[in-house]
Length: 547
Image 1 (spheres, one colour):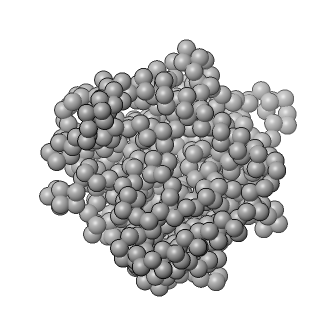
Image 2: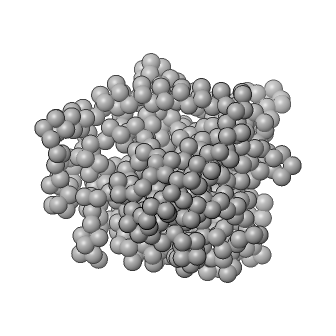
Image 3: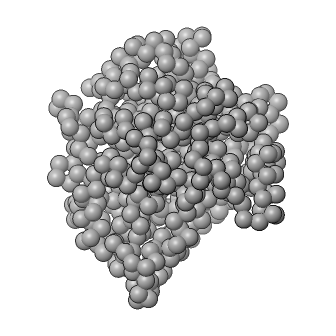
């Protein structure tokens, strides 16, 4: 915290917020002033303990296969609670949500709306079935990506769109959004879903597929649990091999990067996995990857376990391509799948500035990365205000022909590097257009257009230099740019939209019809009410003053 300035542009009503008691104030002061000590001395050990407990639980259920047999009983309990809520006459008075603690989510905010809701217990944490004939997996929503790769990997599979961060849950990405390094082929994770099992606002269990209920099927992505409770989901899987052959291609000009990325992403036979890390306005490294075996002596010499705890953070390893030139290596599959987890992409450099030092990696690296959930749990109101007004976690999706301009805009608004870059196909769903609109044009002979996800995570350069940086104006400029280009903002981030602006960015037509048809009005919050910043941080009236 000491590296951040005290001066920042912050609304008075936010800056004036105070803890409610002397003891709370003292704890807040300790947790704020000694954030580094709290991170290393409390959050890291607790994160390690949580990880170990999760590993043991997953091993137990994988070994003895008890949990899937209880799925129907658990779903029936969710239905019972929903029907009891209906019978109690609370519709329109006290909405429903899951009972998951807000600090456990992977979004940057701690959901405050749950305090006013009736919480439905949804203990649904297990993988149900792998169907190798259909190449699908059926799972409960609280399974996280660590559990998914541990289960599928030894069997030679992964999710068709396998998400990077280990603690992200399947339900979170299925009801929200997720993009990965093969999204230029598959699109977002929603394009790989075969069926949703939903408990509706009336307590009915619905199995929703593209064939039996296309309207609800296409309304569920990005709905964030506001159309019903997700109790199971069936997704496509793809075969994998033990290693990824990764080629690092340095680009020393923005024009070179844009030309190469456009060519790779839209090729007739594109790379199986494609991404880039942008290190400045002009420099970047493109990574292309193909599954492979280490079946020759030459290939065995190329093996590099990038995710061992004593290794440098992956994004810094990638950056070496800019100085030493392009190179290739074989990365073990789980190392590749979770390559940015140890450094939380590149966020850990600001949380634990010495986290990549050799002494730290060898002495404490085995503890792993601090869990986002525990960082949120120990986050004081003052730190949360600093996170929203001095720090950026933002992802924007816009059409591919805006690459060069978008990089310039991110530099103007944030000046944060590295930047994440994933190309992503946005598909045309015809009359079943969901939250994401059909692209205005498609690639020749295709039913999709190529967009890209540009992500900025970290402290803006002006803040590092102890100068004024206007968070609200810059973030609202980004949101306006995304809307103007027919793009989108990922909503796990801090949003500065008004409600009308949010509805303008995302197509609510089908969503609103499904809310009415399935009796969700007065039963579940709207998406905007679930994803807007916590109470007391920013108000819609405040935003309306800023054009």
